[in-house]
Amino acid sequence: MRHDQTTSASVEACGGASGGKLMTRRSFLVFGGVAALGLIVCRIGIVNANAETIPTEHYSLGEWVDLTGCYFNELSSEDMAGYSLRVVSAEAMNASEYIARYGVDSSALENVEVKNASIGPDADVVVLEYETRNDSNEDGGIALYYERLIPARKNVAYSYDEQLWLSAEPQMKSGFPGGFGLVKGTSFTTHVPFCYVSNPGYLEKYDRQLRMPVGADRDFELILCNAPTRKIVRVSL
Image 1 (tube, one colour):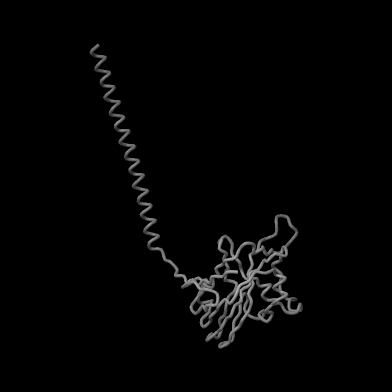
Image 2 (cartoon, helix red, strand yellow; image 1 turned 135 degrees about the vertical axis):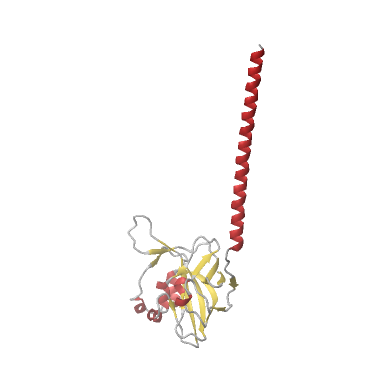
């Protein structure tokens, strides 16, 4: 009887020791996990605190924007020194209306590649009236193909519609692709159409991109350059 009591006490003692070791191990693992998580959060905070931020300037309709030293991708290939631009007005319309209002005679469209097509009578382009001047540049210009018009919903980007723009400015076909340059000391006013394009539906027999309706988009940000300062014009229809 005494032997049994001793054995039972020994078992209980061993069980208590095992339980204590298990609890200690769990506590260590929990502590280690919390410490690791804390280090990760600390590292993220340090990286965010030291991340480079690009300064941003916002402009309103009618304000002149100095583009000297500005670029999107590479300063050496984007020479906008001496150029200034302002957006005078903004309006939404259908591509056909744009051609009727700003286009020239149909013969000017013969060499314009048709890339985008309208899908209905609704407004599908946002037209910005640009006033541009060149005070000192001999060789550079404005690269329209880099510019983006971002609606307030920020899930799409409107690009300039070269097809439509060349219907209004056929003389620009001889300039550099996707933009224009001015003689030093001159200015130029033009109406630049921006649209959001989408590809045809699956299995549709259509090889052109489609201009999507502007719909409820009314407030936009026009990105004129990304660096060294991002310059944005706020646009409302």
